Length: 501
Image 1 (cartoon, helix red, strand yellow):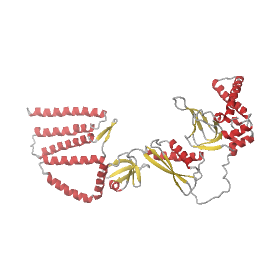
Image 2 (spheres, rainbow, N blue to C red; image 1 turned 180 degrees about the vertical axis):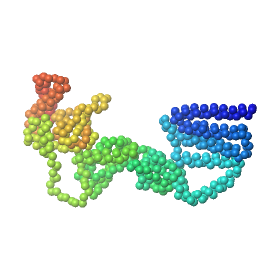
Image 3 (tube, one colour; image 1 turned 90 degrees about the vertical axis):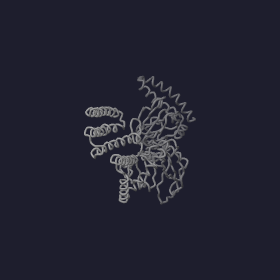
């Protein structure tokens, strides 16, 4: 074959392979495949280097033992070595996660493997292309390594500790760890250190040598489930079983707490100023631990207030009382709230005063549920402060809002008068104060004045018929009065039966 045809064959082959690799790279780009960079390296680096070597050997007729040709051949091997490094990095060291690819191993191991491949390739080029004995180079490299090792002792200490951490794998990128006084999320691992991002969004660089010497706690292993412990103190006057029951209800209502493993509440110790209780619960997202703890501790205060529990102050001053401690003075406010309820309009001032002494004030925090639809009840509520939302849930339907209650409004009057189950859910929109009227508070008044049941039944039924008329657009007062009287007769029987009159 003439020389010009041979050169044309080389050029055509290079052009054809370049076009094919360009099409392949474009296809890999659409799939975001990691080999796209390797294909581009073959097209832009290896193929031109091979073409230059063939042209120098055949067209320029450079001698095989000549220095210029050996330099070109070394460049070809260097290009091939870079392609091999890219191929190994993007195949054996990568894994597919869904539609994306990510590193299978930490960056430190990838760097070590690249260094080994570079040393092996360099040794092969020196021995195969330049016909040099690599022994002398290895000897010089060994002497240089000793000198560098003495000069970079601390750095090498970090590198060796990093290699140990790499093979032991006590944590991975994305794990939450504690090293000494530092707690944060691992964001990078390299030759010298581990980079940790704290909750304050600060980046802390922890040398690998420190990791090898400090006690390390991985908060994300062996599973993502993490346990939280809280120690809370309550008064000696509060029954332990009641305290544990209240704390357990708070734990179970706190968002982010796992139902399994089950939370635990134990009596821990009898301390100087209180009985201490240990609460343990589990979460599966350590990044939200502060948010979950905040909600739990906030709800504990509201639950303690609502259930009459005391969280004592630590004090060394002793107070002795020779009579029962007076209850908070809310009588006047309770009387005003009761007087504003239409159901209690027939009551005299004396009867209102007597009832107010048996009422209780409760505090609810934002998001807490006061009553549940379908639950039995024998009490009604009057809103003193805040806002509550009334929702109902039909069969196989989500809850929907039907009303909002503010100061002076009430709910649960039918549960108080007849004991019927709750017809809706009521939830606190913000911090809510309510006055709770129990069945016992009304029982004595009805027993003393039985005719009062008829008056209260007529008021309730008139109110219900009025609301129904508005919904159904009925405008005849006489018909509404007749329906109210009929309904009141049925209602008064239910009231008397419920109160045993």
